[in-house]
Length: 321
Image (cartoon, rainbow, N blue to C red; front, top):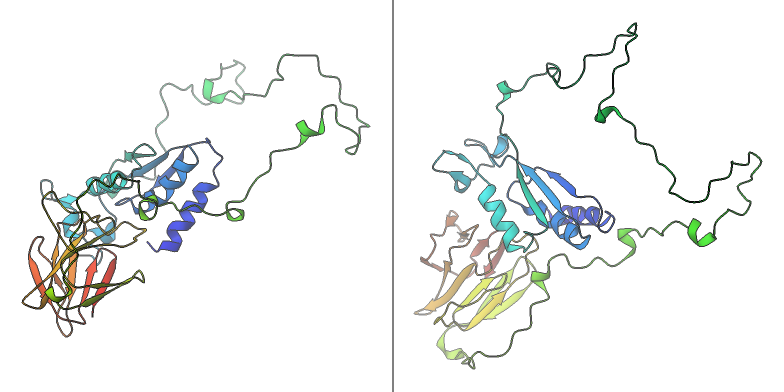
């Protein structure tokens, strides 16, 4: 999903009155659209119900262009995007604002255009000539607004002009102002990309990387960032070292769609050669060497890459130069 479409969903969610009715999304797949809508629902103090059978559309099935083998549940041999959806919502910290609803997965031959069978709990259709009055059900009742208790309302004056003073104050008559979502600044719906929690500075002093330890490389990211590296490091939305691990550099990148894992990829040098290694990321990494076929990385394995190589990480990428 392009970012502009995602932000359009977010703006639509912002149009819901604060604390208003819940939202419903039909078709969530792996949860990317639910992140945009769910962020808007959280800010409007409501909840998003995300409805999907999580078996994928026709074009996601084996043999089609958009089939993703890693979404197939090997136990049942069918696509199951629910685990990926739940992980996406968890990583976005939206579990209290997005409620996953799993729909029935019906085959085409199970569907029919025939009219539904009559409900046994409802009375038969009324005969126009029948004289017996049938008691209406709750669903058939029409609820009318009833004035609250208080002084009896006076009869409406047929000669009352709309320009005449109203029998209540102008302040009471004034409807609440409606503010268009486009008339106010749009807050960043992805706090994980900017505002980071303030943490106490308890870590040990980091050793400065020795520039002579390796050659300098420039990582040019699809997000517009350009980072010069000269040693080892980690790349991701919010990269962090494991206990006992040390790298020279942490390279965070902003990815609104969250296709890049928090700690997605590791890089380093060996004998003057640059290498990358996928850190068991959700969407994996793909190496595109000049004049070579794309190669998907096996997690945990190091791959030497030459300058000019493009490395795909989720929906983003960087070029080594």
